[in-house]
Length: 429
Picture 1 (cartoon, one colour):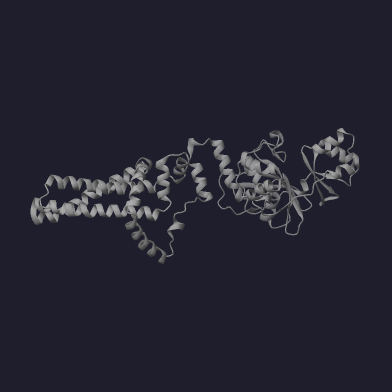
Picture 2 (tube, rainbow, N blue to C red):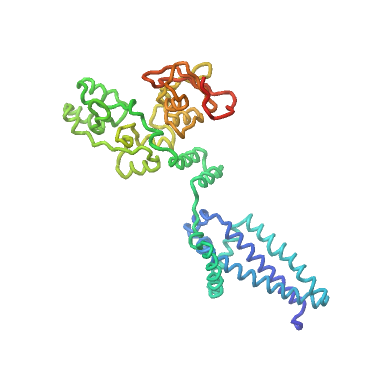
C-alpha cells in the first residue's frame, strides 16, 4: 500500500466507516420495526415493506448477513488505519491508529447510527431492505455457512431459530398496545377492544340470570295465566317448562306465537308445537368461547348447567355482547332495578345481583374471583348463617345485612368506606 496516496487511504477509511455505520444502523432499524405496522404496509403493496418482512421472517439469516458485512468493514478499516498511522508517524502512529479508530467507530460507526435508527426505524430499515435483498443472494454461500455453524451451536442449547422467529402478543400485551394507542383509537372503541380481551377472563356464571329469576311459561299453569305471561313478556324468547325450570321443555319465540294469535290458533298444543329444544351450556365456559358456540349452534339463548346437570341460570347472546359494547338491550331506567340509592350515600342492593354487574354499573371493585353474587360473597365472608343487622367489611366497602329469607341474604346496604381498608380480608361485627 506504499504506492497508494494518503488521500485515497483516508477516503477508503471513510468509506469503510460509513459501511460500518450502515450495517450497525440498519440492523437496529430492521430489528425495531413495528412488525404489525410492517405487515399492514406490506399488504398495502409497499415494496420495501415486503422486502423487510421477507428478511425478518428468518432473523438468523439477516443477522448473519449484517454481521458478515460489519465485521468485514471493521477489519478492513482497522488494516487501513494501521497503514495510515504507520505512514504518518511510524511505529508510534501504528500504535495510536487502532485506539483512534476505535473511538471513531464507536461514535460514527455504532452509537450515532444505532441511535438514529432506534428513533426512526422505518426511515432507516425500509431503504436498507433493498440493499440486503441483493446482498442476501450475492453473499449467500458465506451467509449459509455462518448460519449453519451458528444455528448448530444454538441447537445445543435448545434454541430453534424457526421457533424464535415467530412473533405473537399475549392478551396482556395486546391490552397494553390498545391502552397506549391514545388518540389514534377513540376512547369508546378502546373500551370495547379491552372488553373483548376481558371475555376470556369471565365465565357464563358471571353474567347469567340466576335460575330463581328466570321468567318463562309454565305449561302446568291455567291458560289464562300462560296468556298473561306471554302478553306481559319483555323478551322475544321465553323458556317453556312444566312445574319448575328443572323440567325444561325448550324455548319458544314469541314472534311465532303472535302469528298463531293473529290466526286465532294460539292454544296450548299449538304453543308446544313451536317449542325448540333447549341448548345447554356447561358451567365455567369462558365468554369468548360461548360467543363462538352461540354462532356455531345458531343459538341466542342457553341454559347453564352444573356437573350434575341441574340448571343454574340462563345466558343470552345479548348478555355477552353487552359485555363488549355496554348496555343496549336493557332500558336505562330499569337497568339497576335491584339497586336503590339512599340520601346518606349508602346503596340498598338485592342479594341476587351479580358482583360483576355491580362493579360495571357503579364503578366498584368488589372481588369477583370467588362467588358470583352478592349473597354468595356475604355468605363466604360470614362463614355462618346470615342474620339481619350483621355487618362486615369487604375491601373498601361496608356491608350490612338488612333482610334474610330462607337462610339467604335478600337485601344488603353497602357503604363505600372513605379510605382504603388496611387489609382486603373481611371484618365481621
